[in-house]
Image (cartoon, rainbow over all chains, first blue to last red; front, side):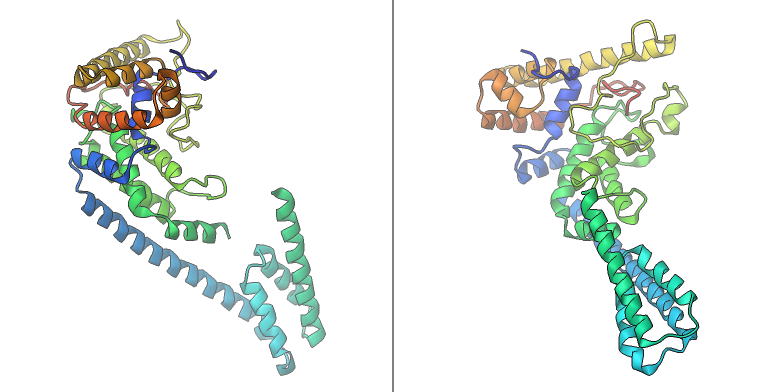
Length: 148
Length: 223
């Protein structure tokens, strides 16, 4: 008997441990039974993990919402000093939606640069910005596809 | 985006199944180390293998251990790697280092390792002959003695069960994949799985005769 690969031969204990710890061929009940034989209170273990996952999930969701709020506030601050006309409010919302969405980390910095150059904005300016951002997103998507 | 994906994957995971398999892995892994307590169920700092498993999950959630689902799509495998790494650190914890200095290796520093993958080049590596210092030679000798002792315990546990004895012979030959064992022995794969269940029941009783104050079995310095 000998392994049919060119890999270095595993030790007896490597084989034993890897064989019995691999769940292949075992029913969930077999693994639970093995844990019980080790003295594990399986139900208590499940509850411990369920509680941990619930708490950590909430914490990460809250953290994500905090970051989203910060991002929105940052976008709002971009518009505040520029005195954007009421007529452009719809476009402004669209720009904010794009920046707050999934247009990638480059979108917000691009918008910041764009606004820095101007003292005030027209409807055309905002439309131009939206087109630029959409082009940037297209380029990012193409780049991602090429990487894959 | 990556973080959102990871969070969604974490939230969608079957944590009940994962903790069963991860704790099971942690107990089997703990059996490879000669803990000072003399039992694989009592680890340093008063921990148990299941604690190490739960802590691995916690570290993944709180970000102490990073997880890139695109790079490591198998969540359980990634968690096993964390358990393995953490148990190695635990073994080398202060109470062990007080009494023994281990050779420095590149392991235990968080470098990627996929438990269960037989192709890990660090598995079972031994330094070239003549390159060991006296301390390393002593460790290697103890390691070999330990392996012989555990083998004897396993053979004693399966004595009279011809199939399990043959299964142990497969391990001697470096076979551990059910498919390879089935092919080699001319068994149905279902038979190998049944033998695994039987051997698993014996495994829980192992470790009681493991000596204290010895290096990890089979992979000293590579954990």
